[in-house]
Image (cartoon, rainbow, N blue to C red; front, top):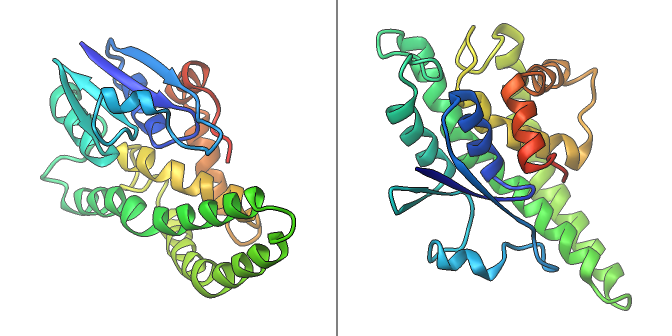
Length: 222
């Protein structure tokens, strides 16, 4: 039995979506964030880290979205639908690169932006102007410039390719989706500059499995 522990607005949506794409049986337990916008302490009873996604497989608790995606594809993607085969070298390289790029490059900057936004929101009124100023400097000097370079590279990739691995949808698209939703929510991507990214987001969200995942786990909102 597969048992997914899912937290609203989190990386675990990727796993929920992939499970729906794979059309396998699984149990779903949903959690809400606490007032500090963190996972509830009860998740530490499932895995010591207390972070999602957590996928229980035969009483083993698996963590890290990239690893869980690879595990599910290895054991449940019987028709080899969601990962390019080894004989398609270009598609395999693209798939592997974007699968790791999402967490290694894009997500750290987006998490930093989210953290500073929450700090400002929760700051007492007397120090809010100071926290806003610090947030503005971090955004200008560390976040915006880095994201702009990455998003340009993503936009170019999607200009010549329907999906990240090439012509076919793959788990790399599932992994990249959350990061690009976060990028769009944080700054509002200009449709004149990032038309390919925005069109790709629409293609992802029009998939039946994506819609089922939203119905079960809630809509992503950042």
